[in-house]
Length: 126
Ligand SMILES: [Zn+2]
Figure 1 (spheres, rainbow, N blue to C red):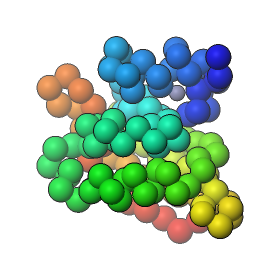
Figure 2: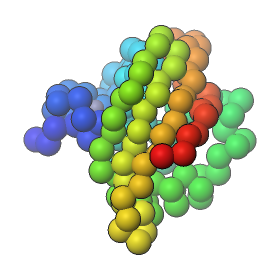
Figure 3: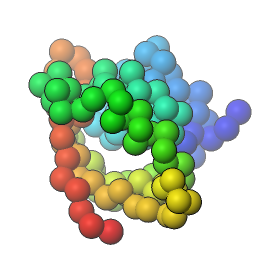
Figure 4: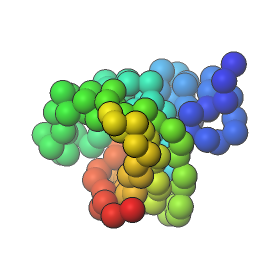
């Protein structure tokens, strides 16, 4: 069994996999963020849409998410700072030209009806 793609050091089937699979809930904003990174890496677009807050889903098309998830090879996740409702992170990926890129984002999350949702984020240059 592989260690989790999110870099937690925990096995995938004890970390993000049960959250993505819906048998376990993300208990924190950070756990949701980690599972969303892993979902990008395994191209689980439905999970990414389901964990985006309903009010924000209009801003993301399934095609766009699919393109972003599948045209990049997700290398690793670095969590920089966490609060109860925000996560700053860097996601490292190889783009379609095999160049290493960094997606640096400060994301906001909200807890609603017993679930965490991704709301939106600010992006930074590398
Ligand atoms: Zn994980």
